[in-house]
Image (cartoon, rainbow, N blue to C red):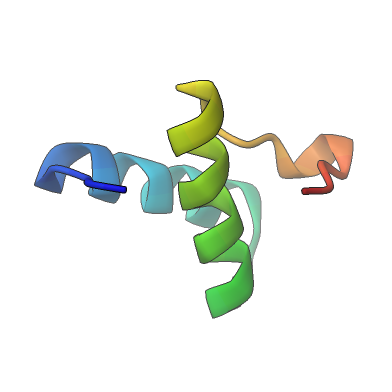
Length: 49
């Protein structure tokens, strides 16, 4: 799995905009989700990996 700076930052910013407190696990889940789906994870929908 390879991320370029802007993609990596955009995924993490998306997580932080959705949740007031973010765990490392949630950040990792969001990165994996983006890698697999080429889309941002929606935490409001309780996405489960």
